[in-house]
Length: 338
Image (cartoon, rainbow, N blue to C red; front, side, top):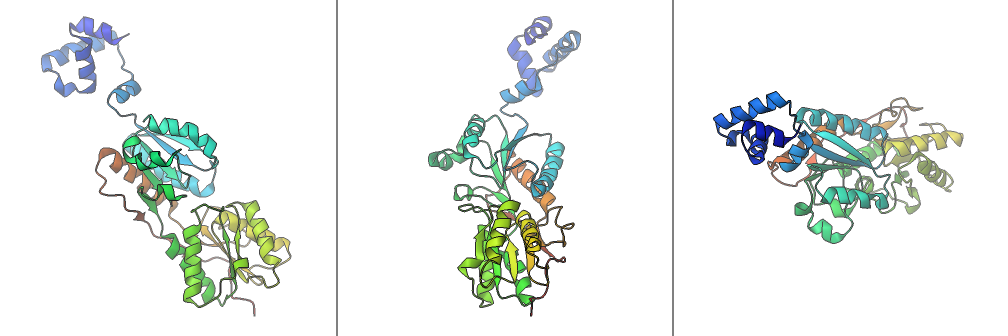
């Protein structure tokens, strides 16, 4: 059944039927009654998606993340789903695997405005060119960063995150209070901003305590278990290895725990390990992992609400929205060896 059939039966134009479907308050009551009766008689069911497109609204949110199955991002997604369902939005997830080539296709979706808004979760920039970034505010739907910016191109967009510098400084202070002076740091991928602020916080705490930061104690762990195992091996092979290791995320911390035990060392008797995120595996690690907890579901909820505000025009500014972090002490950290 088509809109033309409804219009013919109601004795009105197709434009009037369309206006009734999109803005019924703009149609006179007598005409509304005719159209309603015709729709009831014909059983016409308007295509909701097409109607939303005509209204300039798709009720679709694109969520871009580096990898489906990431245990921390899974918790963030729970918060996003909860608010999306409450607000009547559908979610399209794009898994980029941190591949910029794949993002070229995604950019076409973004700039054709086939979504009402975009959430980037610790993912790389979706923009092909710097010019696109400069014109971003008018060139694509509202965009919010859930978590920190991965590259400088995204720093001017609104975000919901913890204060990574303060959080990492707190974790480092805790290790220093345990008597550790030789503290290593396993960072993320080279060039990525994902763990840069955490490294800044680590260095800040070390400077404040007037402790040296040996260049050999800062290694790249690629944000993966395997990368962290290789990084930990490099640290352990040093003539003077650190007595504690701060890992830029929990996944790397799990890799560090495995490599330390493989080397025949005891945790935390010989070396302490601290992570960042408090993923679901941290509590059941061997030994249970001391870490900096981020409120993942709260970040998801607040990111989605921030995006809804941007979509309806009620967002006040692009300032970052900070959420609290928490040091969770478990059994992977202890006093520095005598």
